[in-house]
Length: 252
Image (cartoon, rainbow, N blue to C red; front, side, top):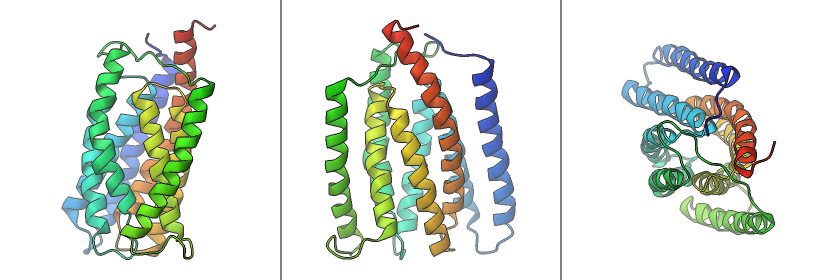
């Protein structure tokens, strides 16, 4: 089933054009700074734009989301690795999330969506979690959050029993929610958008804090802007997928 109308088209174009203008304006400012690494800044911008296209297509239930998702994740893996090595505020969770999880999940999601009717012309058939699905989701998320926090403390040289590092805590929440969101997305569950909304909120806070903590991490401003656009799109994505899941269940 296709769920397209004039509002969705205008909304998607507004998101894409807004992100493009914002990134171009930011780069004009960044390029005035002699310390800016031009190639890396351009790479980051391309990845951010691909990511916004990815989320817009995902909201529409289009299988093409996985092509742009791959581009976004591949570039993000490079950037987060480069920015974490030797950094006083590393985001190893984001690197592991993108390189070891998001990247292969683009292929898993593609084939799962094909099984649920998505192709170049038709949107995916969305579904919803049942009671047991919610139980498994909540328990899995809670356990995963604890495991990720312990892992990131080890990678960052900290101690899980010591004072909570705000950036590590936020990184943990973003990683755990992103893993959950990607699983639900790959299996075409509408509830993925609840996870993505929360991911975007915590990611905006994470990158805002990281940007203020280290001016050298110039990519964080682009990523913060990207997640702001992600957040706006995720609200519309939830609205669209509620409709898609209702149509699949035969509801009015």
